Image 1: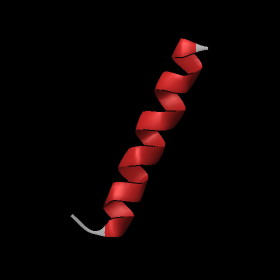
Image 2 (image 1 turned 135 degrees about the vertical axis):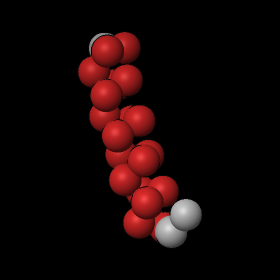
Image 3 (image 1 turned 120 degrees about the horizontal axis):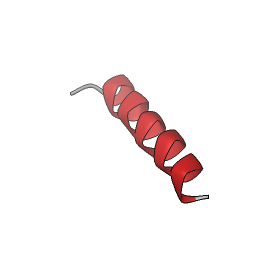
Length: 22
């Protein structure tokens, strides 16, 4: 995995669950 892929994956994981949690 490249850094860009990791960044995108983290962005998706952080954005979606944060909305569900809050």
